[in-house]
Length: 460
Image 1 (tube, one colour):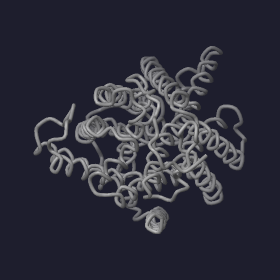
Image 2 (cartoon, rainbow, N blue to C red; image 1 turned 60 degrees about the vertical axis):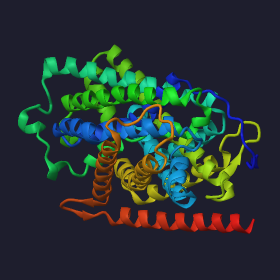
Image 3 (tube, one colour; image 1 turned 45 degrees about the vertical axis):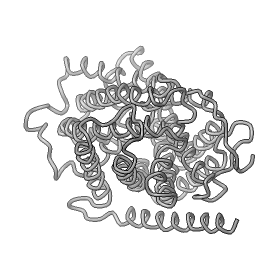
Image 4 (cartoon, rainbow, N blue to C red; image 1 turned 30 degrees about the vertical axis):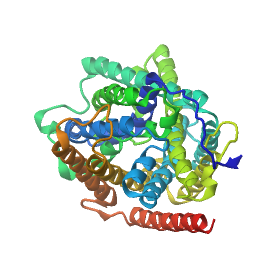
């Protein structure tokens, strides 16, 4: 391993199919499905409303940026081009830290479902151990080249779609005999701000990630052609499965009884678990869900570690992030650091939380705030580059001219700001001070890390 100081010849391995599956793997999340369904029937309306006013506009912006500026590092490179290295490194720090903290959350989800299926008495310590083991397997996947590593998100995406389709079909059969556990009426579908405010940000969280595949732009065969197509295809698949999947979970389980960790298996068991064949199908689908949880962590790590490595190569983050395999050019330093941080988070939160659901939500809320902040920088960069680099070729651009671009980005930024606030503040309960404190400490650490890298670069 060595710190990269020369131009790397990246292997062009990502085709349109890979980019579609990578994006589906990144965005389509089972934990988002159960969190949204917990809101009740009104979550279906929220999916549609936020889909129109956020999901579609955000996807169009990512499509334009990804095909117009296909640079290795993705969101880091875009913000660097618009606002300079320091702001880009701040965004990348948040992007990377979010993934390092979110991976434990998704692997706790894995451990909870695994325990529910096979070892109901497995204590929290055992679940923490499973999470740590998965974390380091994910690190190993990150240090192989994308022509091999891409198959983890590819297979994960296919399994996710299969699981969502199975849930939707099972729901249709269940409703025909038992009726809806949560009736869909005009009254129940009407959005209720007071009752669903806590989970609306989770829906927004579940709509982000179109930009992630662009972190490997130099490893794409034809980003100018394929990025917009991949985003359009994956976007249609994702929003349809989210809406229909939420309806399916609501068909099976009363909203108040949905467990954020175990709701998926509860739903599968209710739909298919009566006969021997049905129980076998639940096990098969459950194993597919477990792999999809693992692939979630791998997918985000693949993108975020590449963004962090690119920042470090340019001296904006400490050199340790830039350590890459001499033969493969893969981000070994960033991946190993992510594994260490994720392990420490699992151990720490394991001491503080009383159940896997508490642990999942604590990790989720904290990482989500850190995660949403870089997108504000990305959207501001989109607007600035539209203004100062107007003549740059854009194979795809957000339709409607510059006024439409301003409106589109402004709408996305407003909704993101509201989501950040609602992760920090729960109506009726007040501020989540543990989450607020964690965010502040993370940002302070980021400033120290970035200044250290700058001083080291200047001294060199």
